[in-house]
Image 1 (tube, helix red, strand yellow):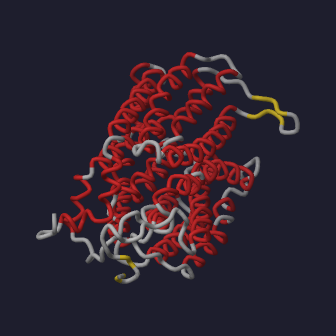
Image 2: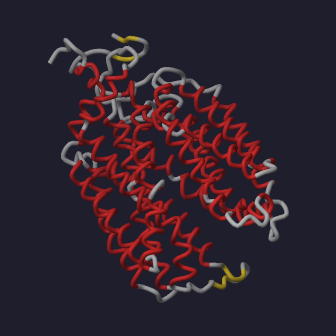
Length: 453
């Protein structure tokens, strides 16, 4: 028997195979491209900031502080509105929300290039956050409803591999389009608009998959979740421990991403690297390239290893995330102790690798343990918490420690300690993952009054 396309039944209901459902590959490709342009758009601003600042804030003694508010404007808007769009994503067509979000952030990015004043630029970055909030919590849930549990780790790894690649492309695109003297910096925002609009329009032709159709257990038809139903997330140990671990990881990632270029330039005086045909490559550019490569390799490896180990160890996604994050602790400390280049670049590569290895597995955990009818909201809650207590505050905390001690050593030691904390939380969660994954499809039904035990 089926209800609205969702199979019902008991233990005799055939279990879905490990094959993706119809339409899975086109949906994954489209969402991957959207995620790629998502991060290109985010980091174009960082690439053109040296040229935008004198154009919009000439002779302003507080120009640096004001420009530093632009990424925060995006992040706060994205963080606060994600739960709103997550709630909508549990109730309406997710492709419609994704399409609207992509078009909105693309137009807002184009408007950033048109901004005549800093205030207008600030507002356009807020609207970029609104657009991405409509997309971020929803996109992984579409993938989760098209691919079974056995394959979600590797598939979501491909989706999230767009993060380091898109970030690096954003830096490169912004720098190339702006020109050596920055005379074309506004065009760096314009060039991302046409592909963004095209990708957004394509979403309107995609069919929204039935929620829960790829689960290992049948999902009964459920009414729209009520506010109190979301409290069930606090009763899922895997969700709670995973979110806390991701918060520690985001704290570390945000701190390293913001302060590492300054550390390389002012504290260890990293030399440029001469590459035949390319000339002298500055340390900040080398760090960006290493981050892109390490992030891509680590994200894909983490997702595939989590899926590979899952038949042997039910908590594999937690296991691979926790072990590599703890291994990152000595890597960060080695960055502080290794000041000989080019050897230091290999240590930095290893440290970044451990930070990104968990991306696929931890997001797979979110997809697997959240009830399908509130999956978008679970991603939204996770986004809100990990950014609020993670990269929204870590750069300023590390900066305060720098002001107090005179260097970045104490800040990076704090980062390494947070990596250990995140790893321990993930290893703790491994014992609960199998049970929580099995319960997820029927968890809300069990929590309703009068439900069968």
